[in-house]
Image (cartoon, rainbow, N blue to C red; front, top):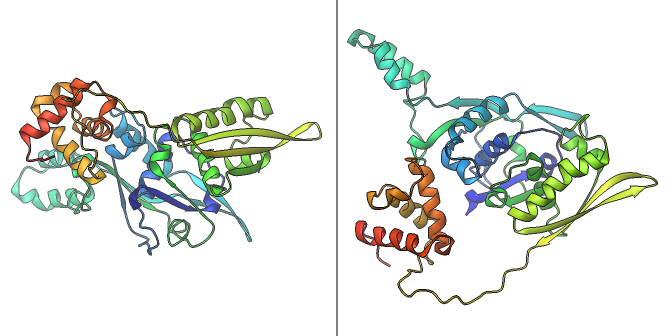
Length: 344
């Protein structure tokens, strides 16, 4: 799916910036929505939902707070891009709106009288509650709206040469800011499976400044952290070597390749255990998981009353029913057969 693909100019991959994990998730959630190979309206807004953050590994109970904090912080952040004319610095975003779902109720209390109606309507406009939301985005789940800085747009769309792309799900679950950057560096050289960068350039790109000046600290807290997480959570197996020039380590070499496909093993299963939805598309899975998340007959399976998080959990089961106990899979299948018009 095109909305799963992140595309950026190589200059962003090599740029100097420092973003938190939540800021990376916010940025990737917006980047995934940018149309590929099409002009971008400089004022185009991208809507960030709790589901976007949960998909990228955020705790469902903290996703809203993480988004709000990330929008505040990312508005202040800049990136440094090396150009022929010098180092160009600009912000990632030009505008952020954090939706306030309680604004309408507060405005009604503030302007209860008919003569206050104009003030009430103006208040709604201030909170953007009169604006029509984009098709396909669930308004109850939207937390923020962002607009990119116009100067970065040429580096995000209509790219013909010198760009890096990867699937957003490859980086889902990253807990280290360095893993995101290392993975982007790897994907820039995906065709060769080899990447070499000087340690000075690496420190610059990661905006480490005075941190981890000793190579042993850089190895422990940055390189090992990123490499181990990439090996654990992505489709790639990566190894590295630190290269010396004289008595000093000067370069980092990364070698990587796709992990070998696991051998298919025939598993004898209980004939009463359904092989759930193995031919369903992602769109169908998302639709049915949303329906299931609101069914009373399986509501006890939810850890809390967070329907969005419950729907994501169910969608993972629909994709891989063997990830849970057979009895749980049976209950989900029975609920869908009994309470919807779904036909196998």
